[in-house]
Amino acid sequence: MACSCYGPQTFCGVLHPPFPNPEWWVPDAVVLGVKVGGIAHGMDVKVLTVFSGTAHVDDTLRVWGDTGLLCRVYADTWGLGDTVVWALRWTDYQGGPLEEEGDYLISVCGTYWLDYANGMVTGALTEEGVNASIPIEYFADFVSGCLATGVNESEQEDRLLNWEGEDGPWLSLTTMQRSHLTITDAMGRSCLARDWDGSPLQLTGMAAGVYVVLVRTEQRQFERKIMLH
Image 1 (cartoon, rainbow, N blue to C red):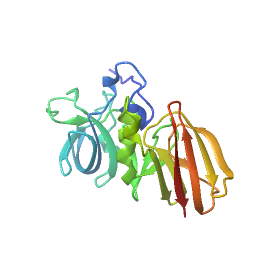
Image 2 (cartoon, rainbow, N blue to C red):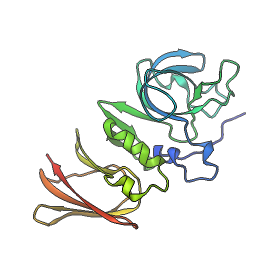
Image 3 (spheres, rainbow, N blue to C red):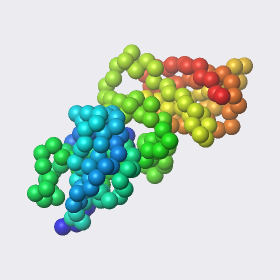
């Protein structure tokens, strides 16, 4: 048998698929973890942070990969000591008798892992084929925003995230949604106006200072002041 599958090609899409029967794609745990061992076609992952699911910090998860016959990522894709954001599903036991209840698998049918280095999570977050980065301290909000459905506006009051990366300032929304973004400086002059889906956006060419960010969605609009350094 050969693997023939296709899933959402963004991490956010995997968490909230735009397809029918979403249980085929939605992970059971999203964790930041380090690979600490290997066994047969699997690996052991020590959990550093839990973003969703029932895993716990300091758990060691047995995660099964491909055997050459399954729709999974090969476990040897990562070396010992690699720290990665993984979206894991409960094992389907298709890899043989070594796989047990409570074990996980890493699917290849979509985007189920992201790189992590120097405090930044990087990969196809919200746009297929486009690498974007977000600080790890904001990643829980990102995951929550991708998972959220029908969230009351009042529960998502502070949805605008602003941070400084090594390559300059960035903006994102905790809940991905169609919107129009306008940024003005302290004098009221327009610096940026564009349609936006809330995915991480680098603010290139903007001088240090105070700016006003206005986000308009179909439901409402909100405004925030940000400081660029």
